[in-house]
Length: 254
Image (cartoon, rainbow, N blue to C red; front, side, top):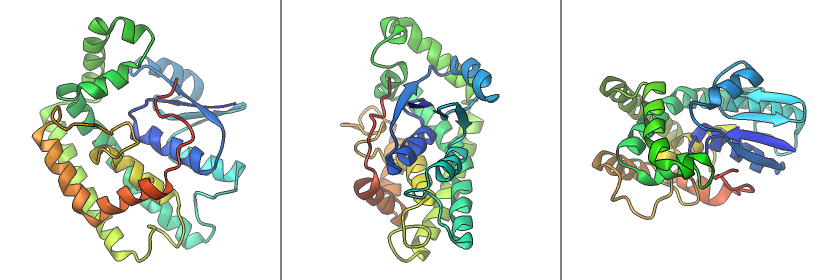
């Protein structure tokens, strides 16, 4: 059985889930505790980040490396185009989302820790020790995340500016591209990467970031969510989630 080690709220993990679902591969989404996960990931892969895919005896860390591995081992429903120029275009767009994803993660974590009680409930899970002792686990988790992701006023301002600049760049790519997809005439890693990395900013239905009410979110988040949703890029992301995101495994994990 394949196991995807994940954080439910991680957009990089959403990217990996989408790739596995797109290829129609069976897997289990296994949750790890933020902060404490580092001992496990370091032992298994020599690095600290999720997602990690275990496929039989293979351990693959990093969502892009997982994409390359899946195409090599399971070529049906390819994530990358066969044509060299289109393949490079898809990888270039994926590369843009790598750094963008780190800034989106930082900004959204700050939002969750300051305003969003729903996301904190997802972080500690529906059952287990974190839920049983949530009076203590929530403050502890908040401290670990604030330190681990350097959530300061200065870094958050940097992240907001990086998100703005990157969204403008990706929006321009979308405006200039004819057709439904970002690269060539078919769905690819480029579409999965852009959509999953920016999904937290759009609160898309059916994702970990869906919400019935925005009252608990900051004015800053609500304003940016509305702005992005009206851009061609935002409309494209919402369309891709409606038409292409056929989830086979619950993002909440186990």
